[in-house]
Length: 72
Image (tube, rainbow, N blue to C red; front, top):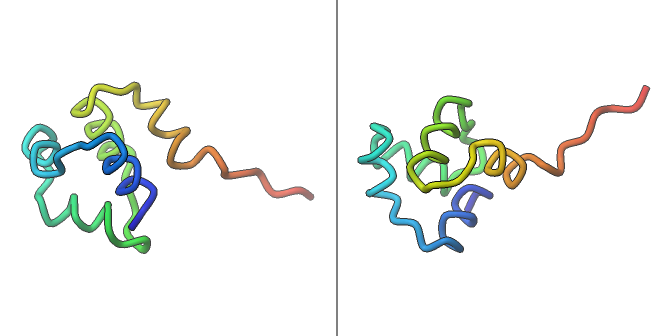
């Protein structure tokens, strides 16, 4: 499961409902929540955040907040 999948599960979010609200297919939602090799696009993140009622920046921090810049 991906970080997005874990986040949505913890919030008891219905993925089918998110797919309907965002226009993403249920297959794409499953890919984004189950397969770590899937890449979440910025527009998808934004739409998912709106659909679940959170600030897009907050969702971005949850999913990618551990990312760090490389040291020279």
